[in-house]
Length: 480
Image 1: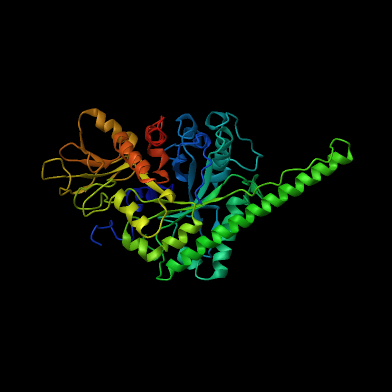
Image 2 (image 1 turned 60 degrees about the horizontal axis):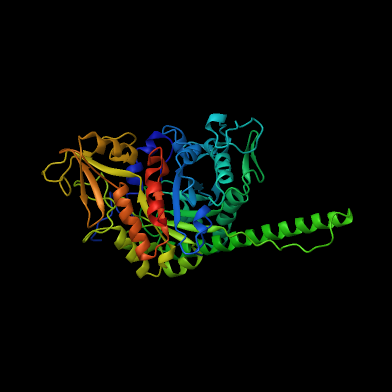
């Protein structure tokens, strides 16, 4: 989806935006319910909403957005899940990592040392510890925020290339899933000097998020797709569920065996009285996916009723409904829209196909889509434009924290469609469509009213230093 090298980052604005395999953007005529997330589970009369944020592997470079920032901003205390983006699948059909430009970045993942100032726990990494980098910082973050889960997200826009090839047979699906479970869930990382090794990242990841964009539909250039992707994707998710459950049972058995051995030693030494022990309950590993808004892409690749039996939840595309590559300005993330993509239409499309409402998590953008050379007057919306708007990282794609400053500058006027739940900035020439706290409060109310599962954010590095967007949604969902 988005890579750390700048050439890949520059396509960030359109990567998710190619929302269902239709370039440059989709057109309207045609992208186990559990929650153990911190204090959300304490209220017996309050729904336990999921609050999920994507942390980008490459954001630690140019953006200098570190795992520690999730703690200091307050985001970690309000999230239930962090999705680490991304893990890649090789041409051989296996999850892998390494230091391969454009393909994998083990340095960022687990080899890069952090000093005391950059570490969540305030302790500098040593040269000999097997786990450093983002993975170690995420482990420290979980220790500081019990109940916070970390998921590995596989694929994304740029790295969905080999999914279709990898899932064509039962044997290949089994091999793919086994490699992903081994690498991320068991934490058996490749040795990289003192870093890595068997079990180096064991216990870090609490589940797997499958971001195959998109089974059965054309997507990023070079990404393979086939008509049979739909049934193979269903079988792949079934295989993930089976292997995750099997691993959880084996972990529980190992803990039980260890407990029995410890009890026996204590008894032999006269330290115990032979009391029974509690049988460990297998851990539940979450399984989710990022799923599209375009009905054609849904029907081409997603057997919704069958998939939802194995998914704990799905994160639906709630943004990039229109993108800066288009010739006219338009909303990118409206709650409602007539004869166009919208959050409500996407929710209804998934529910109609069999997705339980409580397993639907609504995607929310922490960035805006922008156009320049806008003519036609008025509020600027729906008018011709000449090019994507200039921006910090990629033309037509700007972080909320920057757009907030533009809104406060007085140069831009804030426009709102209160009825349909979206906002935009316009200075007479340049237009940015984005979600601000007022829009997100409306969307949070929608989630509550419809009985949905919660909110997801792409991506956490676009929010402010005090996690304004994450905080706004958390307060609105949980009424605090």
